[in-house]
Length: 122
Image (cartoon, rainbow, N blue to C red; front, side, top):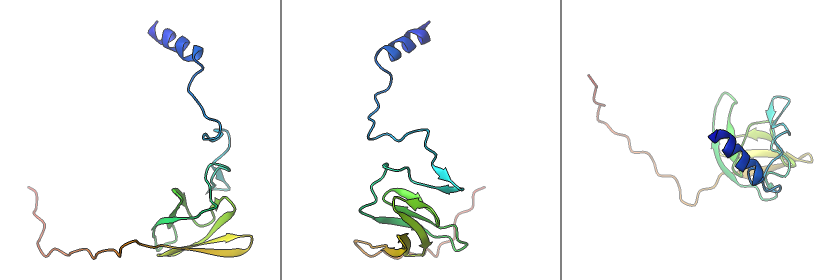
């Protein structure tokens, strides 16, 4: 009974508020040919920012560009991820390479090595 009442109220007020410009079409696939693609219009790639790189020497590295995870071959707007290096990402746009370099506001601090042996749990 309560479920029916809640469903009636939900339907009568128009359901969830959806803002057409901020929501992606749920029927547009996010994967094409086994590759993750950014939905068109969901992200603005006119200003590219390389946020970070998860480096994998075996070739499965992931780059974080404008809050979007990308692997080699993925398409981000008009750019295709061509190569992910330890400190940079190479994108291709209309056959021309675009290199995004990691930059730090302050240099990373070295990790202090502890010479103490870890305690064993019993």
